[in-house]
Image 1 (cartoon, rainbow, N blue to C red):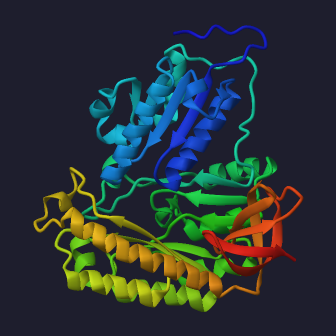
Image 2 (tube, rainbow, N blue to C red):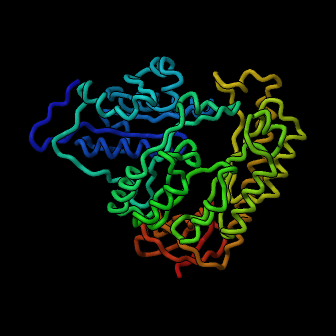
Image 3 (cartoon, rainbow, N blue to C red):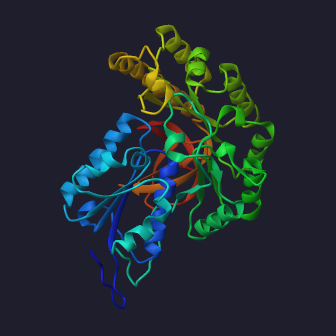
Length: 422
């Protein structure tokens, strides 16, 4: 299929979706920008697209199922569209995805950066009228690192993302400058493991210092860190107010025995030490985490250890998920796999704790004024996030989108807090 374009002709219409981590979201955003600049027209739905691209996730069997569902739905909505599956699921099981009815192209992570060229070689070309990515003008995600050299027993990511590699600081800074010039007020740095950033001797501390010195970004947020990457030198960078007081630290389990079987490289005490360092130097910081239930061999006592540890640390948010066997990882061969029934029970308990923990964190700030970057507005109610990741709603006759305003937090509301503009 060849798209013949003439003078001032629009190009192929493309719809993009992304599942999983912020790194996937950052890569999808970058691809959208590249396609728009080459004359492709970005649309919201596969139903109106010539090309549908799904950036898949494969970290759990649920992520796999969601990917298959979206691909099949796209084919039902528009049997004539070219359906492209890319990302981690495409890297892990390309033949499996290729067998799904309607999927016309499967592109692994290695070829994902070249997807635009691959489409053009197939005759799916852009137009002569180039455009700009007109997506979300409030928060933007920028990839600074990829890959992981660790081999945690449960994790498929090193197998589908490869070895660690970091982008040059100059490239990162140039991209931030472009995004801020377009009106973005918050930049989120993302990668598989950004704490391991290392480009020719420049570590994450050095990268952040350069970003703060060489860009005009209003708010800078980090996507995720590991507990042993929290150092005094790193935390001291939060003193200037540009870095959002929000730290996502991956816990996975609050039991030392489970952490050992997971092949994690820290203990409960080391994790708690990182939390204490953050709270001592950045008192308003939100500390969020991931917690896994049902890892092979997790006893009732070990689950209770994990539950009690999370309760005591008082996380601002907890992402709870059940262990999912992934072929190629060590843990899928471990004995004493936990039943789905037990996983579900433990999930429910941990989710209840997560909801209570989030509410308790938000209540600490009732009556206080915090900066809120508003993301959008519907029915006269705007919503956005504080620097420490509290969702805030407020009523306004003005369009608050992409405005950074000081808001007094009043009371709990929906999934966050109701506030009043000061």
